[in-house]
Length: 160
Image (cartoon, rainbow, N blue to C red):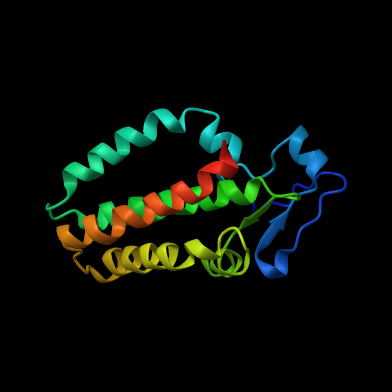
């Protein structure tokens, strides 16, 4: 898990920046980022089977009082896609803090086109969770679902 002090020989970290960088050979031997999404864990171990089910459930929730769950689920799905992409980099990187993840998304050539959609999902999710702001069914269908779809479509080529 990222907060523990377990280190492999040759592993490097950039704690002050909120980014964990793992030396590639050690990563291939043993993943020390347990609990973080990786391209292997997200796409190699059954996500393709569970994600369509989740999308179907969220679609049925549109128009109910549970828009906070829809927006939050879509945001965290986007976060997992982005982190899985970061796992494909050499060396892979993972972020402990939203702020650092957003900065990397905005700065990297591959992810900068996703920044506005990612940020919108994050903002809507936080407003729904922490301030009880309702997200209308129209906004869920017009903004929330398309934002995640764009992020997935953009990152899929790197993840499969």
